Length: 540
Image: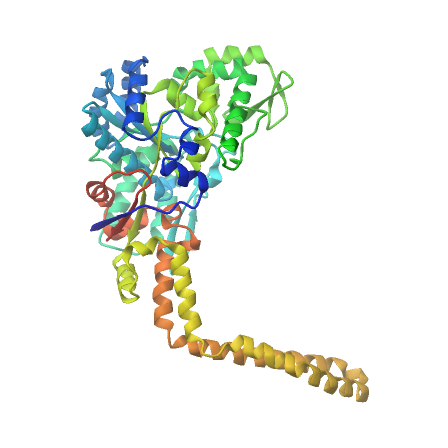
């Protein structure tokens, strides 16, 4: 394995400016990602108090329940120290960990924590926040593998409850194992397949929920690291979150005003809207028989967006204190929950998350909190030997493999260069030239035999088809002379950018583990260094 590094050219205006440290983007946050920003954040955390012993107990209890949780449990002993801080990142609990960008994010959390602990000389713990309260089942109920040149989706077909959090979805080990077996059936039999299948089966039968299965998989893949797993959907965590739930219910106008102010400040900085923000939302979910109801607040009344039913405000406030497990946060207020409970130094975000976080500074300030240092996660691109060989033969530098527009342009140039004559265009010109002459002939046919007009029309369709076929055949025969080059370029694009999107956003990591072994994530971790937004090109 060899690792090459590169920094992507950010096409998004905001992300480009943020990564470049432009004041227009950085002013939307409390801290810059430089040395001074980190020191300022540390001073702020050192001035706050956290329920460290309780945090340690809850996290140790959860991680100790995981088959490979021993390293995480040991690392958590440091959390009672007033100097201990956290690097956090998170994701939904996807099937078999979901797309491999989840692994990239966990790797980013681990490497940044390692770097900061060494640099700062104080405990820095890596923590992965499982968004177990999320209920978008369609986003996570499947995995994609490349099969015969295309992406094949394996979907879980077992029992599920609509609009119920992932952590509370029914989990049946036999159904889960059937899904795992179907997924493995899409992979070729390799020297690693049997061991992988057996390991995953063990983790399935240890699990009692989909979020635990996710956590089991993550700790297995990073068992030689200190990565700490956390599922805030557990009732104990929502007890700690009770003060936030009460605050959100007590001052909804102030909360929405702050969210709106965040959009105003972003617009003033010169950046576009962030989709999906509802200014009537209470940014809080209320659970009725496990089903999540987004609470909306307007005209002094709380309502369920799902049903329109009016909610009793006094009852909601009472339950936020005595039954906090009935509430959960949304994408806007989840960061507040994290900030309230944990001493987070850095938050590692994907590009979409960073857009949301750019709105949150006024909201944090409304609750006397501050946004942590936000870092863009690293990317990890796995380049097989097959792709490397194709790139070498086409004289494409390995770093250029991440430039999709350049690859597509090169493919078109190869195809165009093969066409000494544009057969399709030439066939179209021939048809245009023939059209008038054929029309005259057809008119004569109709004059002589009016009852057989359709014969002339069918004759013209046959001519169009045959001339078009000749033009296409001319192009195809010319392309055949450069087909080997086209196949290499299509192989490169197909493996690195299936459906013209980066593979890490689509392909599940199990595909790579089946080819290169379960130790792959740890090998990558050992050979990579942290840098915000860095592209890691893994030459396998």
